[in-house]
Amino acid sequence: LYSVYYCYGKFIAVGQAGNSYYSTNGINWHGPVDINSSSTENLRGICCGNGIIVAVGDAGNIAYSYDGKTWYDTGESSNRLYAVIYNQGLFVAVGDNIAKYSYDGKTWYSASGFSITAFSVDYGNGKFVAVGDTGNIAYSYDGKTWYSGSGGGGNGVIYAYDKFISVGDAGYCYQSKNGIDWTNFVDINGSGNPNHLRAVTCIKHSVDYINP
Image (cartoon, rainbow, N blue to C red; front, side, top):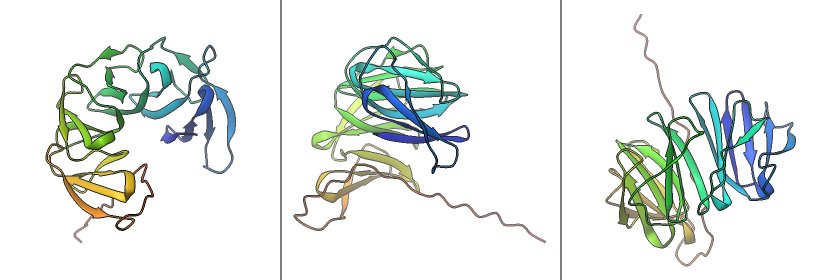
């Protein structure tokens, strides 16, 4: 399994050979569900938004579901897609020198200017930001037109606490306020440690103050 997401009351995980599993409690799982009935391509990313669940993967496959149990193939094909996000009323998927966008998760369009192999994408501070290998990043203000950058690439990215944070090979982490200018701020594993970081997440806290 490559990715898991909590969508509309269910955990949904996707992985090899186009299979998915779902669970309402994260403990007891059902599946595998064959998302791509006509394909054995791996699925690598999943997200949900606007009442629909979207999974993306190898050979540019994109599938969607309303409940995580029954899936529909969009018929899309292209380079491998690693990740997908829903934000600003738009689905955005990124992968091997390709980015795609969709308003409804069913009909997809090719974005322009995307020229990196990207493993992860997130949105914050008015931008979509994708990170990839060899320190490459790409950013977009609308998910449709992209610009290349460098210095903050990696395997995973998240926007949290007013900054983008990316993690990558050899335990390195990068941060950026605007998604364009990046700094290497910590080596999690210590100098020379070959361990790689693949993903990053956070728990966002909020406090409500009630005046008596």
